[in-house]
Length: 342
Image (cartoon, rainbow, N blue to C red; front, side, top):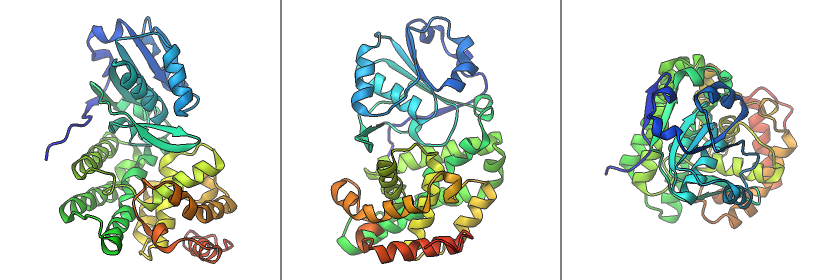
């Protein structure tokens, strides 16, 4: 089944090659550093906005106060692109997305990712007229922010287990063909570790192509089962508790390790890959304390009871008691070389 989705254009100097009509009546959502890289190309923006919150009510209020424009650019990471998507969805403006880091798949999805009381929600449906994957812009970013793009594909490792578990335990629909295609994306990711680590054109294109592939599978199946599972649930829950900002792919990578251990999977290949690609997963490097991990684990049963839209997974199945959380932290400490965890 062919699905509608954002299809990237690859190359260099891609903004310079856009038709002049895109630069006549436009607004921009951006991050500060990317804006400095491209501002010379934008002579007369009606407004330039650096989104400092993705709370839906705040973002919608800001958009309501902005001037009307024919075109909206999203230039930066997930927040800039999602904010631009929100503007396009609410106003009907033509949308151009220019990710300057590949740490999250937001530019490749049709839904707008926002927060409601610090909890993730997806609203709207909008596609860009142009999705520009510009290697020059991406390679000016800190390498760790592009390497972190592995998170939303690595999550397939735990997501497929959750999906099979839900099929076996509660009779949820399961598609062997879609699951096999999803596994093939994960295999491509792991095989490309050197190029991803070095942020070569090939590595950046691979991450982008894998985003396109996982989004297509989720659209084909009708939900995020082929790509998202308990690793994301842990990340969502922890974010709602700490109300801190993390590099999404690093947080999800830690979630994959925790979820994989709780699923009793062999996570050695995942650890080897993370080390090879040089993506942070040690809690201190991700910006999370052991106590915050424990809090999130213990909060997960109630969180999942409230977030009923999140499909069945290992944390639904086993629950998390204080003893289970302690044992899981001990296992994590052992495999990541921090045996003091408990």
